[in-house]
Picture (tube, rainbow, N blue to C red):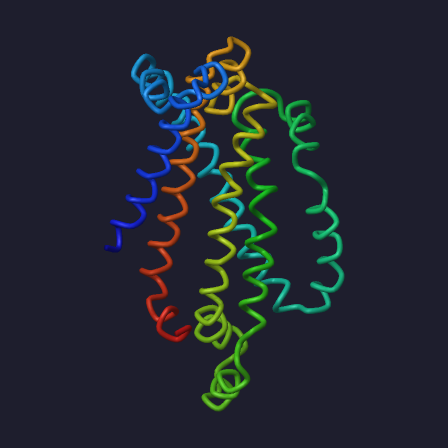
Length: 248
């Protein structure tokens, strides 16, 4: 039952999609049916998988850098509140800049290749991780803080053994949001710099009017985003199995 309902929902959606294209007589140029997408993948599997690997590399690299940077900066800002008050408005202002507008400039600054994609993924993922981690680190119950002081724990001992473990559920909220945004960031970068990746496949197939190939790339992106999200969920359940119990 745990896996049955998601599979049933997915199969039903695909069946309705297939039936809709058949009943309405929609040509594959406008909206390909599932068999057209499968045929497009089977025609060029090596090409699509190679571009998928390029997207995965940029996504995972950018997400990893954003995770490390976001966690470290959150620890620093919550440890020195005066620094937080001075720095956080600047970070909020930088985050408010539309990343789509920055993507072409990254190509100018960093050139072609994977670097603009990785940087754009970092820019998109960094702020959700930072905010979620700071929220977790500042939500430690007063009784736990009192417990640390009663045991004569130093500031950093209390931070590592009390505040960080308590913050982990909130940290993973940020990570789950960020991993979904990471795929979007990678695709935006690839569309602006269509040299590699599934975003480039979508651009090039659109230029050649190969809609089924574009949908095959979109389907792979959806699968990638789903897999990465549930990998983060699995990591959360492994590292903080107690979180679900205390949340009811």
